[in-house]
Amino acid sequence: MRISQWLRKMPAVWMWRRRRTMMRRDRTRNRNRTSASSRSPTTMTQTPTLTPTPESHLISLIHSLSTSSPFSDLRERSLSSFYALLQTWGQVFSHETWTHLLQATQHSSQDTESKVVLAGFRVAEFVCTDWLSHLERHEAVCMCVDMASSFAQHGTDLNMGLTSVGFLWSLTDHVCTHRLISVHAHAGTSDPHAGAGETQDSKDAGETQDLNLTSLPANSPYTPETNALLLRVFEALTQSSLASQSEIRNSALRTLATSLTSHATKLGEPFGTHYLSKYYLSFAHELWDQCQQADSTPIQLEHVSMHHSRNTPQKQWNESVCLMIEGLTRLIKVYGPCLQGDAMREGLVRLFRGMMEQGTAEVAVAAVQGMDGILYHVAGLLDEARDTDTDTD
Image (cartoon, rainbow, N blue to C red; front, side, top):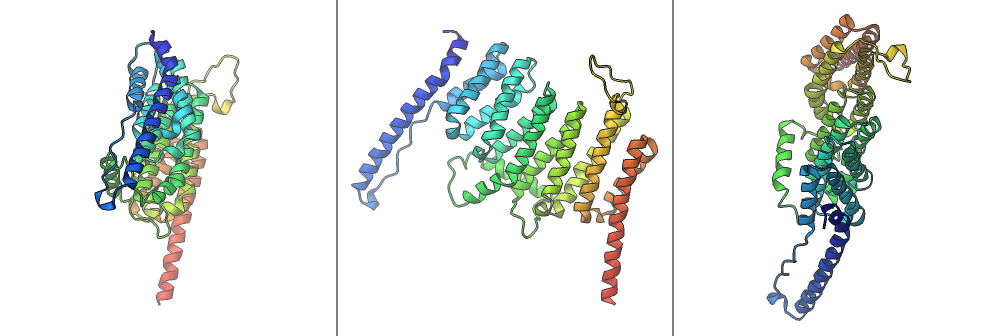
């Protein structure tokens, strides 16, 4: 039998074997329940280990075919099999199955064949729209973030990249709502996979402590693990904000600023201080450097006319820099106490000064507005200090 024919029949075979295993499991449970009721509590024995299902072996085989096969048709068919299995049995997928599925989907984003990329994106879209609530493990959510970020950066289609940025926004909402409910709901229960993920969870918790993200507001429902996941999403949005396509870059910039300001009251000042000083400021410098190195040659597109203000790569990067300054101004207003350190203020002033001196008129005007936001905040700090001294006297 040819491999392609086997892959078409594989979901039906897997469903039949799954039903047979579940019937055996039910018979075993009923037999154990009947035998246990006839014994005294002191002589009751533990339930025997259930027969492992062939699920992990089949999923591992599909994963191997979708990533290592030299034939594009076979890779595409493997991803289509993932989609069919997810439609039928997604609610009973184990953590190992989700790991294989997410890794294979992320790998497909960098495939050279467009049909393979589209097949993988179809699976990614299905996961991010309908199955996020079933990702109850910290590692699975991290892999889903990496998958969405990979499609946003390496996607060959503009609509695919913009949709992937929307996936990152959905993941931010999932981490802040559904993930939080899942953590509290399972706080007193035992997870059969807890032992397998203990090392990774403890590692993420350790990284969170090293990043000084454990100091949360008193009314914050978030945990250090939640902050670590949010930081991973924000890093993915930051990387997407440096994409070569201006539409994806601008969409990621707007999403990043909105995500940070929407959850500012729950994340707290320590998170804002760490992210702005270590990530956002360096990202702003990198974005400005790429804007200065952009080409000023007009873009020639067949049957497409562009406005004169956006008809060169440099002008498109100028627009992205203005959006970055606008988002940074919003963050300054929300995370105002983060600017109490001299290093942070000096870094922002030096960045805006360079933009005013070396940038175009559009960038210079935006930099002046950003500088005005810093001066407004510093004036507010001086007024608060003066009021405090007056009350003390």
